[in-house]
Amino acid sequence: MNSLFSKFEGVFDPSSREVELLSRIDPTKLPRHIAVIMDGNGRWAKQRNLPRVAGHRAGISSVRTIVETAARLSIPVLTLYAFSAENWKRPRDEVNTLMALLKEYLRKELSTIHQNDIRFKAIGRIDELPSSVQKELKFAEEETRNNRGTRMVVALNYSGRLELVDAVNHLLKNRTRYPISEEDIENSLYTGGLPEPDLLIRTSGEMRVSNFLLWQIAYAEIYVTEVLWPDFRGIHLLEAVLEFQRRERRYGGIRSPSFQSTR
Ligand code: IPE
Ligand code: IPE
Ligand code: MG
Image 1 (cartoon, rainbow, N blue to C red):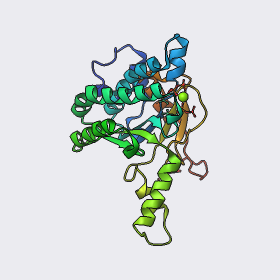
Image 2 (tube, rainbow, N blue to C red):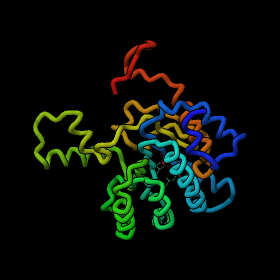
Image 3 (cartoon, protein in one colour):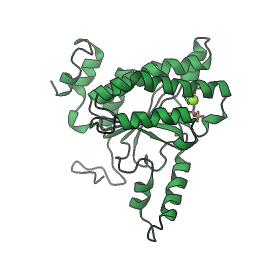
């Protein structure tokens, strides 16, 4: 029995596959940061002859479960890609619904997030979002700022390239010493101060990163599952973590039993 079980008491049936997966997870080798490209809502809806927005609505249950599961696993950082800077290209109705769902999620879930000691943070060009959304995000950040559990990071109007543009502009504006270092750039990213993702999950089978955390995923382990986001549950997160623990991370070094990463 490992220490993870106590955190899931009453959540999973003792004879369930989730509990079997939990027993195989090494609690000392958990990813410090899991980043998720939540994809496949539209296809999920299409399979059911429903409008795309029904897929987005269904995806909220997955967000709720994954945040809760990550918090129980004590994953320090969970970043969710919710809306890219390119997603404005979608029909206005779909964009409006996504913004409305985000506000609804925050209003309904903030107390649970807070109770679970989760600290909320939004990343991306937040100042370009509708002001009502910005208000809700600020409130969530303020409310949870003293929490010490999982950091829940939501990427909104996010683009990895624009994040780098913003970082470089920030450095220029603050007349950072020349030449700049990797550390200078890292500290100027929206994710400055957070560990970089160890595990990047993409649902719905697409084999691309779609402008997500381009700098930060340099050495992330990539896990793509065919499961569509609205079907993604705790069991799938546990499977991804187990697969992560089977990977050998070399960071450009060579395979060696004594190999220790320096990152
Ligand atoms: C992901 O699902 C949600 C967002 C990008 C906002 P999609 O809406 O991209 O779903 P598919 O890829 O069309 O199935
Ligand atoms: C990436 O998914 C963005 C989010 C999940 C928020 P997309 O569905 O927008 O990505 P592409 O267009 O398939 O690359
Ligand atoms: Mg998609």
